[in-house]
Image 1 (cartoon, rainbow, N blue to C red):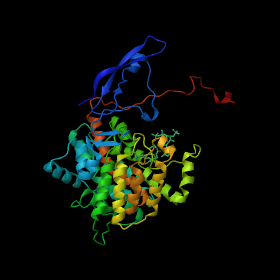
Image 2 (image 1 turned 180 degrees about the vertical axis):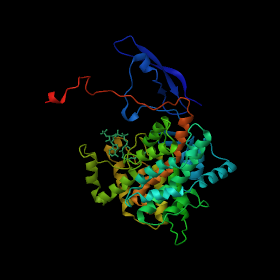
Image 3 (image 1 turned 30 degrees about the vertical axis):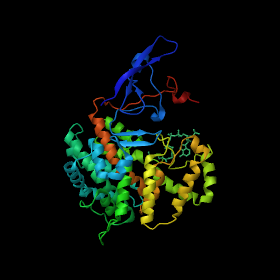
Image 4 (image 1 turned 135 degrees about the horizontal axis):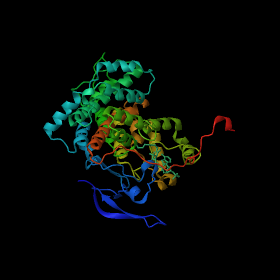
Amino acid sequence: MSATAKRTVTVTLDGTNKSTSLPLLSGTAGADVFDIRKMYGDLGIFTYDPGYGATASCESKITYIDGDVGILEYRGYPIEQLAENSTFLEVCYLLLNGELPNPAQSAEFELGVMRHTMLHEQIRSFYNGFRRDAHPMAIMCGVVGALSAFYHDSLDINDPESRRISAFRLVAKLPTIAAWAYKYSIGQPFMYPRNDLTYAENFLYMVYGVPAEEYKVNPILSKAMDLIMILHADHEQNASTSTVRLAGSTGANPFACIAAGIASLWGPSHGGANEAVLKMLSEIGHVDNIPAFLADVKDKDNHTKLMGFGHRVYKNYDPRAKLIQKACHDVLAELGIKGDPLLDLAMELEKIALSDPYFIDRKLYPNVDFYSGIILKAMGFPTSMFTALFAVSRTVGWVSQWQELIEDPQQRIGRPRQIYTGPATRDYVPMSKRG
Ligand code: CMC
C-alpha cells in the first residue's frame, strides 16, 4: 500500500489572500503527515525543521517505530517476536525482501550470503596502510568505500541484479572487514571466514579464533551475538540511514553510500553511544559518585550527557533495551561474571535516573546502547569495536533502505533548503580600503 490522502490541511499566509490546500497523507500506522511539496509554488514559503524532528523524508515499508509506547517492528513483525524466534540472517531476508522466507528461500539466501564472505585478497594490503591503533570505524569507512573499486560488475544501480549482488556482498563482507580491523589492531593473523558457521558464529570465530588452535564458539555467546545483530538491524530514518539515503539519492554506488552511513554512525549521539556508555561508567567509577555525576548532567553549562539515555523518537522505554538487558544477564551468568562492578553501576544509575524528575520530565529512558556496551565488554570485545559491531548489524538495514530508495518512483536528489541569515548583498571592498 502507498500513503493515501483522505483529508487536506489548509495553510493561509497571514496578511495576504494566499492560501493552499495540502494533502494529509495516512500510512499503515503512525501520525498523518501533510505533503508540503506544492507549498513553495503556492505560497512562496519553505518549512523550517532543523534535525528533521517533524519531517517525514520518505515513504517506507520497512520499519515502524511508535516511540510514545515503545514499539519497534520490522516489516510489521514486533521486535520481541523476532528476537525470540528468528535469526539474524532470516531478519536480513525479511528486511531486504519484505516477507519471511520459506525453507527453500531461506537455504538459498543463507548460501548466497555465506558465499560472499571472503574479501578480495588485495584488500588485505589496505590494512597495512593503517596505524595499528587506528579506530576500527576509521578502517571500516575506508575499506567499505574501497569495495566499489573491486566490484565494477555490480555498480549499475539501475540494474536489479547488480543491486541484489551488492546487497549480498555488503551484508556478507562487513563482518570480515570489522573482524580484520580488530585482528590488525592486536597484531594477530587475519582469520578467513568459515561458511559452515552461522553468521554470528563466523563473526566470533574471525574475531577470537587464531590459526594455532581450534576455536569452539560458545552457543550462549553466539545466540547473544545473533540477538544483538537482530536488535540493531534497522531503525527507520535515523541519522546514518538518512545519510545513506541522501548519498544514494545522488546516484552514488551502494558501497560509497554504506561507507557514508558508517561515518554517520560513528558519532557519540548515534552508534558511538555504546562506546561512550562504557567510558562514562569507568569515569563514574563507583555508585557513590553517581549523585555528583547526575548533578553535572543537569547543569546546563556542563554539556555532560547521561550516555545511553534518551532518544529522538522513543519517549518511553526503548524496546531493544528491555531485550538486551535480559540477554546481558544471561551472558554474564554464562561467563560466571557475578557482581560485575560496571553492571552494578549501570543498574544503580538506571534506577536513580528513572526516578529522577529531570529524566522523568524529559521522558529520558535507557536506550539500546546503555546495555549493548556492557554485554559486548563481557563477551570480550574492546570498546573500540562496539560501534564497528553496530555497523556490521545495521548494514542490512542501510542496504534495504537504499534499495527501497532506488526503487521509489518519487525519489529525487535530496536537497534541503535553508533560511539565509548571513550578510545582505554588498559590494566587494578592495584590500587597500579595508580598515
Ligand atoms: N542526558 C541528559 N539530558 C538529556 C539527554 C541525556 N542523555 N538526552 C536528552 N537530554 C535532555 C536535553 O538536554 C534536553 O533538555 P532541555 O529540554 O532542558 O533542553 C531534553 O532532554 C530533550 O533532548 P533533545 O536534545 O531535544 O533530544 P534529541 O532528540 O535532540 O537527542 C539524543 C536525542 C539520542 C541525541 C540524546 O538523547 C542523547 O544525546 N543521548 C545520549 C546519547 C545516546 O545514548 N545516543 C544513542 C541513541 S540510541 C542508538 C542510536 O539510535 O544510535
